[in-house]
Amino acid sequence: MGIHAAKEAARAINSVLVEKEYANVIFAAAPSQNEMLEALLREDVDFTRVNAFHMDEYVGLDKNAPQRFGNFLSEHIFSKVPFRSVNYIDP
Image (cartoon, rainbow, N blue to C red):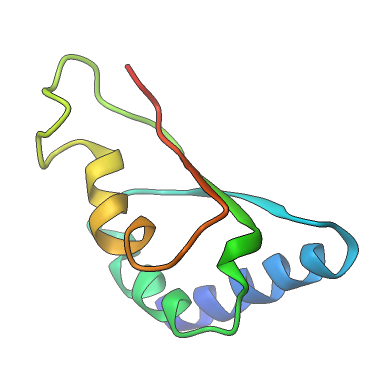
């Protein structure tokens, strides 16, 4: 399912990029996303035209806590490709 979801996400992102200068994409952070995020990195997407956002965040955790969703996404995708921008929630 993760591989199929990544292909569909890439198709949707690329369809926006045909019409617009950049795409805004919100990413979910959870181990259930691991396969999809890994597969998305292998898809033909111009991430330099993608503004990345994450969906939600814990309140009260240290900014370096591995449990923070932003840190999870940084490790699994945000640090692996050159996004146009990465927008973190600051709780």
